[in-house]
Image 1: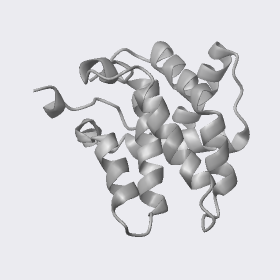
Image 2 (image 1 turned 180 degrees about the vertical axis):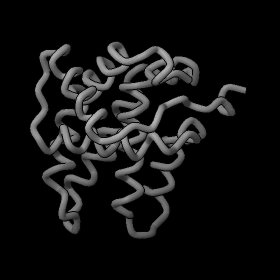
Image 3 (image 1 turned 90 degrees about the vertical axis):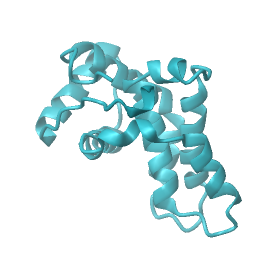
Image 4 (image 1 turned 135 degrees about the vertical axis):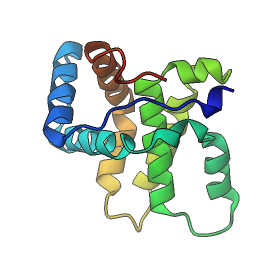
Length: 156
């Protein structure tokens, strides 16, 4: 079954991720602010150690957070936004295989980051606002990374 396959994303060090992000920005003629560039590098580092990412059902996680009645956890919404960013940028074919619209992960990710940018208790509201606003630019940079890296690096 598709969900049991593991993503092959090779662990690498920060300078290699940064180099790849900078090259991708140049290829796309998109230049991220330092905060977003750094966020993207650390996001890639975090997700390179999570081969089970494909098992996530984002919609259910977001619904659970929104309707649980418990306090919304910043960490949970951030993980949803981050996962959607990875899916839409590095693994766009996931939406097709799961029979959802191409914009599905973009909208879910933006919803998570947008909610966090309006969360009065978050000290990272400004960053989440930037992630919300620049989600498409970040996705484009990730897609360019996929194009310029080895074919095996981001395979399903």
